Image (cartoon, rainbow over the protein chains, first blue to last red):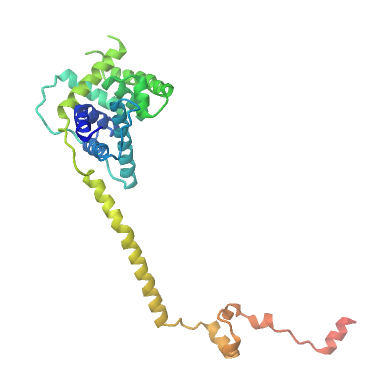
Length: 167
Length: 118
């Protein structure tokens, strides 16, 4: 894929990629921005090459995930503090119910295991199948399905406790 | 509304929020600064450490040449009883306290020895 084509693909998927990077960085916005920039750099400099064996998005999300892991290890080795930064204050038109649901979901996701969080993000946030999620997470479909079922059950219980029953 | 729909709705609120607050798409020419700064520091840290170790080693050698070690009591006594030609550099290690008792054969009176043999 030529540079211009790659750049266009990355641009199209930017919003989703950023959401996935946020999930990989436990909602740390600054870290997610760094992960995205590093991923784009890897892709455009040819350090990470798309070989066409999977869908471009599946491959890109895999690169984002690995970059997030690398950065986490790098931070851990230097004992850096990771702080969850809030997005800049923008007057929000978000309905109160939606905000409460979002906050409850964010809180509940933090309590899930990493694998459960990943598979639920990829299926419910991105609308991917469990098989596609398994390819990104580099686990077997059976393992991804187990994480999916357990994570979903835990998440529903936690949301119910927070009073998030229905929209 | 089933469980999947409830979760889809909940994740939908998160997605809409993230989309609204996503940074603009931009591609930088270099990886994020913090990490590359770390790499630069690592690049210079190794040669600097090697230089410091080499300098310390040279200083140690020069100082060792300049001032011979202070003689210990053992080496002094060895010098008294032996000429330098008889002493190996580490012979003083054999000079233990009361070493003369161990190394010297006692002399017994002949009468006592013959009495014991009988």
